[in-house]
Length: 337
Ligand code: FAD
Image 1 (tube, rainbow, N blue to C red):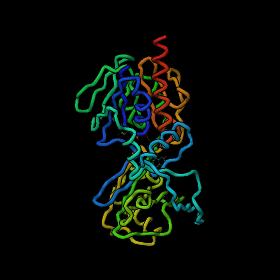
Image 2: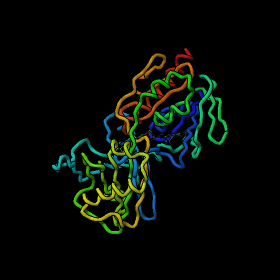
Image 3: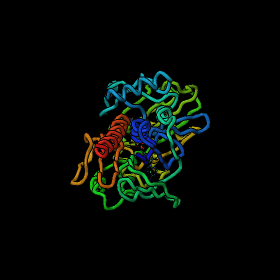
Image 4: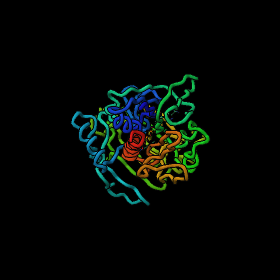
């Protein structure tokens, strides 16, 4: 079958890796690189994983992928000195072992992208047609198709914008809530070590801080700090003046670091409008849910996948992409029998 996959983040790459041996697969992404929210921003000598900070691994197939890419040096465990500050009490931030891409977060998606056919810098405006005759229209007016199936892995609100209005998937998508997240990137010219590598915080505009340069495989003679605003706070100020947002977050972070960050040699702010979702989607009539991990409109041959189908993490995106691939294969088997 000819399959188009929209989005070359973890979910799209997971689906493509599972399908590309048996089907003709093409991926399309609006960005200049692969990885989606597993991304790395470069600024001179500084590098910042300004989206996903780390990932955890519990699914056996995800573990098998991580084991194989680890052998080639694309991921490593992050033995971070993590602290959790809650109601003024500081405790060790214990949890499942953390993994990161090496030397940058996008190294993992880049490794998964090898050998795949990926068109970058192409933003899809709409998906039209029915199963076995689906077309993609891009924002520059160009078109691709026909495809037998389309897997869309964009965040739910972006998926809603490009799928046909008539698909029952729309009523599921409309109920998915995704939260924003502001990311501040601070580059310092010294090796700043406050005694922690990551800090989780509650009840403040800032909910996370990490010394990116302390992750394995990074150049640590300079300090790259990543600061994330709390999702509720980010939602509230999503449309606020960017200078005010940056000033507030820097003020909070400076207090935490006991060091003024406002005059750092590098400062940047990024807004992730659709960063997180923690509620699995509620399905409706006409939408099949494959093992609950992806959503299928069988008549139109359109499958939705992404972290928002499975609780909003990197591993969830992998699981959802894999479910989308299985859904394609199960429909193919039904057709052939
Ligand atoms: P994405 O990575 O968003 O991929 C979707 C792709 O679709 C994107 O590349 C996008 O460019 C593309 N796209 C969208 N619309 C179109 C269009 N119209 N045409 C073409 N392409 C399109 N997870 C963790 O496990 N641990 C963490 O510590 C963590 N921290 C996070 C911190 C932040 C600030 C953010 C933003 C996310 C974090 N996450 C974390 C979540 C994690 O990044 C995601 O769960 C995961 O990367 C989602 O993968 P995905 O493939 O589902 O979606």
